[in-house]
Length: 57
Image (cartoon, rainbow, N blue to C red):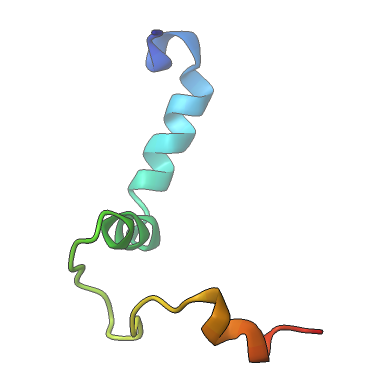
């Protein structure tokens, strides 16, 4: 493997900045299947089939 901070310091800084963003923290928690303290707007996952009528044809 490699040392991200040493070999790619700009990328390491960018990833650290992203991970400190509350929206990214929320998204990562949801992707891990965890309950996340959001603002109540997330109503759950939907399937592509459920979205199909809303997609441009």
